[in-house]
Image (cartoon, rainbow, N blue to C red; front, side, top):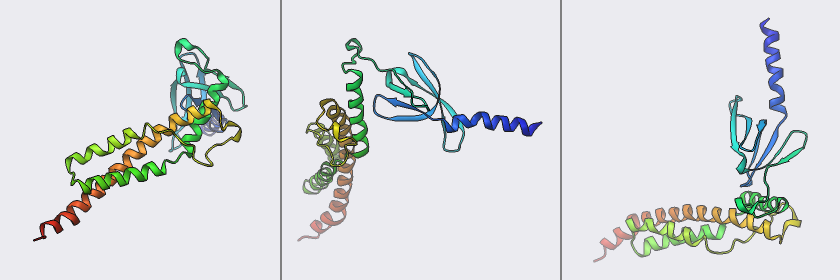
Length: 210
């Protein structure tokens, strides 16, 4: 009797593994799993872990844009209401989220990162900074929150979205935070290199100078 019971258990779990629902969050992230229930408070779903086991998770509905089941039927939870700060219509929010997704996947702040590394290394070596060198990365990263975000060529998934203000706003919001974080780490890397060069190469040679 154990074998049929085990077979029934495996077959009952098969739809959970094969039929994947899609939960689209307001920040542009997408979650795949088997939705167990939806309400105005939360969305409950099963998600497969790396070891193959299933775990139940929950997302507040306020952070969910829509839920699409395995058959392609979409339930939109976002609604326009200026009292709650939802100033965009449903279609405008779709474009905003597309901008967030494209920026998360394709925006590459190469020049700000190079500038952060060069600034961190250059100031640390030139001014012989030690403890004060830790001020440089957050200061530089803070400045990187100011300039306009330029779209990385090839990162737009749909050419029709180019030029749309809501798409651009979503792209800029994620792109700016991405630029700040990566600039912060690249500047820290530059400071580390600057400290090494200053302490190991430059300072010993200065001490040997008559």
